[in-house]
Length: 366
View 1 (cartoon, rainbow, N blue to C red):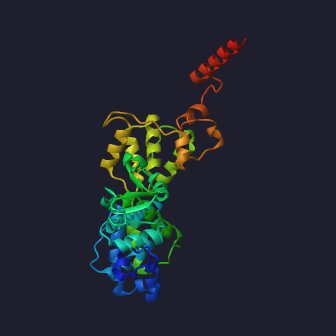
View 2 (cartoon, rainbow, N blue to C red):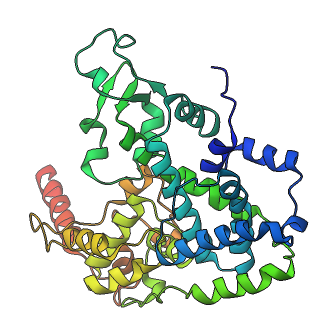
View 3 (tube, one colour):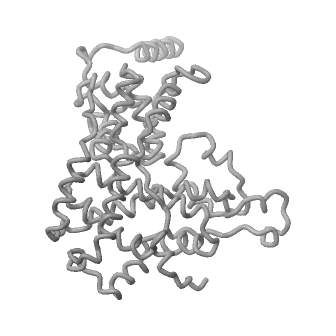
């Protein structure tokens, strides 16, 4: 497949593409340009992108002036980096990834395929009735991706709809409609933008931007502090890792959220405590978060209280961070009980039953 030649409008929609960097180089864009009066409109758009991230967690995808939109992206990156606020880095990258997601929904097929193949290294294939040999039902989908590419990304979701058994699979491909296919890669786009921000050296800004950066930092108050009922040193490493990610304002993978929520519910934390903790997440929505937490706590729906996933399941989802203190626990909730028991020599009910079985076996042999 020959890569498409992208215009300014394409680059303005997807400024993280390599072609956008080449555009900046060819134009000779530098920090000196920012101090010129002609650049005021670009600075205003860059500032609005950051403010949208702070207040709304989404930003406009309109392209009234593609060149202004394109140039405002690196300026916004510099502004965010210069604040020195980690949680703003995460919130901005998430906001921009949501913007990209909306744009991809209505994007032409050729460019969508190119972004998936050349940027994300996913062999995305557009579905056509002819290519599927007229097989019933398959042509109702928009795209298909290799099974392993799907599994690698679907593990971040714990909703039933993302389970492989609830997807259409044929000849090594998973078939998806546009919305689900794009939702599947939002986290990667988020990660690409965040990685670019983290790698960006703190720039020496022109005087006309210093005041803007101070204003943005002042308008971006730190998220509410996490209040713990259980002492932090009693949390298992998988839970402390998830909490540390929230502390940095990172967007937790869905499975990590499920682990953290079920563990804290099991540990006796209130729904309001848990919701407040998620206020650090860049995609935080109180209404949705409350529904999800109450559902997991057994207060909604079928009134089933979910248990934390087992250690084996966490290993499967690459979210196990075992330390020697974990010992032979089978579930994260056992970490505090086994490690901090006041009487470590106390025999558990399970151990007593095991002992009885051994005793019976010895009696039979005699």
